[in-house]
Image (cartoon, helix red, strand yellow):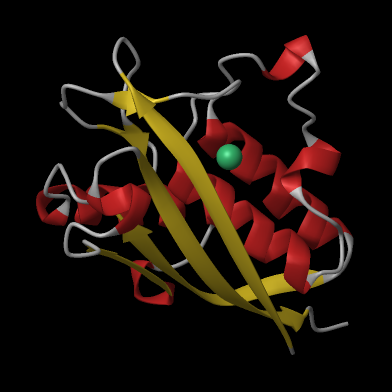
Length: 159
Ligand code: MG
């Protein structure tokens, strides 16, 4: 078994969509980034790549590459899953925490879990997504950005 952790931050700006866990969430602000800036999915991909000692998403999907401009992060997650399978890994579970002052994410979390279950080929019981505020403190508390952490457990595929 192997454990992996991922962490990511994106800045909140006007004129961008807010995509979290593959869900397009109505909000006055969105996240700035080269791809769709889905900070939650980025943290999850980094946890997966980290557990497999395969580096990080910056190495696999460089933000200097125009191919990834506006990229759908769920699509990139599918590519990370294919890479893990190729390397002989399966995912036991994933646990994700979103740090955001606003908007309230509770109602969107079931859809995020469904998205990850579909793309990762896992039962919804293997995936947990939760959200918290930081009580108005720091960059997430003052709504300058949204952060996410992810932890995953990988197991070797039966041979
Ligand atoms: Mg990112």
